[in-house]
Amino acid sequence: MIPHIVSPGPFSLGEGCLWDHRLQRLYWIDINERKLAWLDRDGITTIRDLPGTPGTVVLTSDPAAVALALDNGIHTYQTDTGLIHRIAAYPESPATRFNDGKCDSAGRFWVGTMSREGNHGAGTLYCLTPGRSLESRVPSVTVSNGLCWSRDDQTFYFIDSATREVHAFDFDPGSGAISGRRVAVAIPPDRGYPDGMTIDSQDRLWVAHWMGGCVACYDPITGETVAKIDLPTPRVTSCCFGGEDFRTLYITTAIGSPDGGWTDLDEYPQTGAIFALTLGVGGRESNPLPL
Image (cartoon, rainbow, N blue to C red):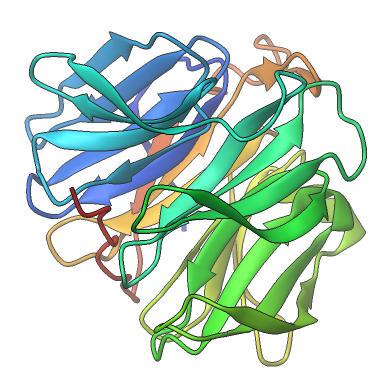
């Protein structure tokens, strides 16, 4: 399984890739450079400046708009006009920032925070309620990262990168309540830190590995490695399924970050690119935030 480049960048801290099946479009962000980018079916990459540091991007019920978690809150962003509108204020001090996030099947936006200085336990995983308030779901998080839900919507998976584990929770899709936290996957030491994550149609977890140079597939029931995709850069940040049949795995990578060092571009000339490869298994549509 050899990934190929679909957008060369390089992106300083490419993150949060997201497939929109309605437009056949791939979105991602560059956290360091405050950019939103997307790749259309014609192969053209569009890059837009943002008025703050993005932590994640999610779809909305309007194909012409996405939702962005920025420094001062959660915003809708019209991709054709650049019009931006805040729908929820940032719940913490400027010492932290938003990081990864996704919407559940009911359209609740789950998004985490992390310390800008790398302080342990300074972040929180929040859930944006239909009333547009951010409620704490998992406190004392160090680097809030990948999250996804099982096919039957009964299990929620979450990564705090500093733990080097993927945690599972029992999930109530009606209320959004989580309980019964447990370790689903312990990451091998030679794979660095787990970062972004997605789930396939067989409920297997695909995890990007920061300083591990790979995306690995895990069985969350046994914790065992099912497959491993090597990338030509150590800083692999996120992954998602897309394409017409959802069998294309897209992967973001990074040159580096102020809190995590920088990659030598002479040694890894393809770092910071967006990659893709076709797999024998597919994923599922991303849930949108209702507007």
